Image: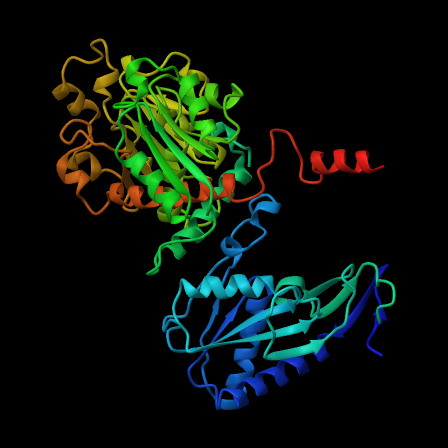
Length: 191
Length: 332
């Protein structure tokens, strides 16, 4: 049982070791699916997707001895809900020197929910170049898709209610690794 | 951010840094082949220029277009203004056309403020220069340029020494820069002949001196102001030659500046009057770069004012939509 009750109303569903194992498996799957990982570029979606992409790249280096280019892709200017909130601060976009043309781009994000972030990322990528293929890796798939988007690599499927919030903490940004669920667990939903 | 940008004093330190940081991220995006972002699709930006301008108008137009906004350029020459139409009627016309933002340049100080607070229009107002009062986006692009060269492109400008030289009296650029640069922690010194310093300058948050040579050695950035001949209705100095000798930046003076310092000018330059040819074209001059940075800074301002939800003056994020409140009232 990994579900430990931490602060009031929150529970930890993945701890640091489980996140590490999930990322190792995802790295192996990426290498396998892309037949060795040549030609791939990892693009993390800020903030936490970038750290996850860097960790996956480290693991691919460990497996194949291959330097995988890692970049970040901010999607703020491509969001479909911009007009619902005050203007957001922008986050860095850095595209690796080799570009993404004719590469296999693996988008990396922390949580897959409605799919709208990934739609925005596909639009943003369109303005950067034309990859040969685009794949999607996420640490947590929590369901409730609102667009026809599916992940290629999933760290863990976590069924949630829509009222809950899933927070991914990474050591580089939040001082520890953990996936935490907070909020109402909903009626009739498996917690 | 407020709904309007009328004065550099509207920006506190956090908001000023937000504009500069946003511009930094946008600069990275505009390096690539497709210089277009979908962010302001379906929004209309009107450039309302009652006064001649090349770089500011083109800069705002490029910024709005890169964010996919529709741009309407309105120049007073060749419009109904030359038939005597008032600012109010022009504004009402623009409002009827559905302008989401109005970028206004006017020869009267306070014109942008009047437009923003009159209730004539519902959109955002951006001051692109009003008389001898303010030009906040110029100050932002100057601060951006200084931060890039003197502070590694991040954080504020604390401890940097900026010298602004020339026609302070007629300069909206000087006033906006003094306000913004002080907010960002820089120390500003104004250098001008006594006749070209405005009344009350001793209350500005800066130093003043009449002697350019005394401050050169401690200057990180020197900004040469244009001699505003079109605003001068009296004799402010004996001759252009004498002005140039005492307050112009020539190579000899440039060589007294510290190694790392930069030379700026808001343009258009009077070459040979406030700045020598060789200085304007030297490696220390960042004048052309200022123009490039202007587009990024104006994109940042347009994005921050128009990119998010349009909040009415004084309304807050968590205030429920009044229309929705009425609806629930009715269904109850």
